[in-house]
Length: 167
Image (cartoon, rainbow, N blue to C red):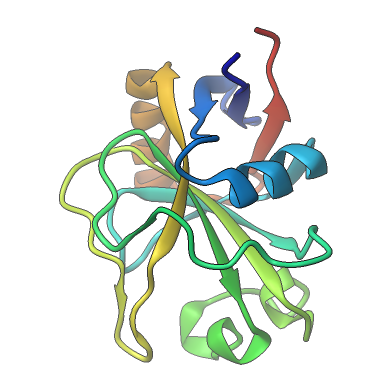
């Protein structure tokens, strides 16, 4: 039976629903599912284009490793990225000193992609593949509009939340 999660931009009151891709990314799905619910400050991507994400402390005993990876996510993809502190602590990324990016610990980036023409390349590090572990099946248009509002008006005070959904 398929498992579903909801992803919300809480301040904007927008939620979408994603089906977990258990067959394609079983380790990643298990790690995320077992850790839910999770919320964190919302960010809009600078480099990848049409992406909204949050940074969280590592939540699995063992990181899932590469699984169902992509560097060209499509609209509706939900991705997991794992970063070491040295990878995202650079001041040019713009994270506040108190954010997860500066915790000195392994950080998980949970992201959703809401539009086309995304490319996961970073000027400092090169290609940054993400594990595609979910597919948005409901609410993508509303989430895309809210994400575009984040881009135009800013992310201050917004949180991105991931929760288990009822079937």
